[in-house]
Each structure stands twice: as C-alpha cells, then as structure tokens.
Image (cartoon, rainbow, N blue to C red; front, side, top):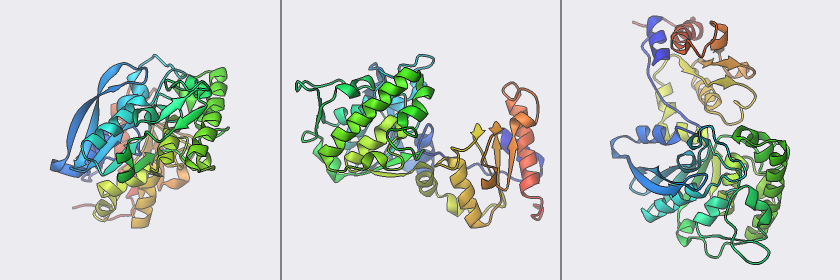
Length: 351
C-alpha cells in the first residue's frame, strides 16, 4: 500500500498484483488469483515439533489443492524457539494426505519457509512410508533421526499419490547435501550451529543413498531444488512429484503475463537483494517476464548487495534514510515515487 501511494504521488495509477515463489504467502496469492471459486479447509496436523495445530489447505478448484508447507512445518510457527535437530516435515505430509482425502487430482506444494532439515522423512512417514532402523523398528522422523534410518519401505505409501499430479514449487536450486545443500546453506537460518549442520548434512547424505536405492534414482539428490525445505523436495521427487520453479509457477497460475500487457512499469522487490535472488526468487522471475514484455522493472528492497543487473533500476531503503526499520512506511512511499520516476522517465506521462 505504501509503495502504491508513492506511485500515486508521482502521478501514476498503481495496480496491485501479488506474487510469491513457493514460500510463505504462496497459498494466499494462488487463492486470490483463483477468485470466487477458491476455498480454504482447516486441517489438524502436527507442527514442526509435534504439537497439534490447524493448518490451511487451499482449493483452487474442486480437484486442485494447494499445500503450503510453512502452514504445517514452517519456521514462523516456532517463534524464537529453534529446534533444527528435532523439527519435522510430518505436518506437510498430513496436509498432502488431506488433499488426497478431498479428491485432489493435482496438488501444488509450496515448500519454502520450512523449520526442518529432515530430508522430507516426515512427509514420507505421513504418506505411509515406513522408516526403519537396523532392527526393523520404525523411526520417528526428524533431522536428528536421519542417521538412524537403515531402510525405507515404500510399498505402504498411499496409492492415491500415484494417480495425482504433484508439483513442488521450489524457491532455491540447491542440491540435497554437500556445501551447497540444504543443511550447509539453510540450516543455520533454522538455528543450527556448526556441529549440528555437520550432523544434518551427514544424515541427509546417508538418507539420500537409502531412498535413492529404494526408488532406483541414483542422482536424485543432485537435482536442482532437491534441497528445498530441508530436503522435503527431494522426498517428494522420490515419490514421483515434479520440481518446478515456484516463482514461475505462481506467475503462470496468477496470469502475470496478461497483466504485463496492460502496464507501463513494474515495481517489485524483497527484503534483501543478493546473489540468491537470481536463483529462483520472485523478483527475478517478475523482472524476466517484464523484460520479455518490454516493460521496465524497478526493484525496491531493504538493502541491495547484488543482482542490480536484473532490473532497470534498484532502490534500497537503507540508502533513502536512517534506520529503515523505524521509518519503513514513509521510506516505502518515497521509494514508490522514486521508482515511478526512475523507471518511467522515458515513457509518456499518464492522462
């Protein structure tokens, strides 16, 4: 809203168009784009630490469901309490199972914003897979438990999954494990210290070998995006799901290209513009679609560390005034006006 007011201050008429990249907010964006026929179901699931809670399951059409992993296994659910070894993706699998119960034939799974680094073991467990230790006992899924899993029995997985098209909207291109993988890159954001990162990465590596042998897909761990959501994308891919760029999927579903035919300027942004922006984040996808449509695109961000070349221009709030966190509304309004002037200075004036 503040950006829009700034655009109005510059003499232009703003048009709001929400986008997302598979993480937090994806469900709301897709529901809004779907219009009056969309609905929300509230499903009891286990949160990242096992506490029961209600999570939203979206329905775009009678047989098209949207699961936002962060609704059930998101970092935002933990507040200041971070438990990187104990957290699980179990609740996300329970949401997928609820979608199957509701008759879904297509399920979009947005996997950003997760609290867990369990390789998707929780999702597998919720969908009927048996995670077994060396003694044949079932293992309760978590990041710490990955090293105790000696076998995965997929014969008990819900057969309805094989008759359903599952698309996993990923917002990163990271592999499952290794220096660029789920644990090393993202587990510190979930509260993991150096030793815990090593444990989680070793667990993911061991789990990858076991699950890949079970599905006879030896290179699955290295697929771009397999490390999304602590490896949840890896587990879903093992079950036959397709990994797709989350930003591209959302922009396609929401009809961004049609809107770009009607506007003179695009303003997008995120909290921090950096090297990860180009690796599947929504602002980069919006900028690329704007470029193809011949529309200038300006990025407004809290701070700019890299990636300016993706946009017609960039505006950093931390360069507009002191302490952006205390004056974010006024700075966003100023940035909106500046973006309109910067990006559209060579365009004919409106009205």
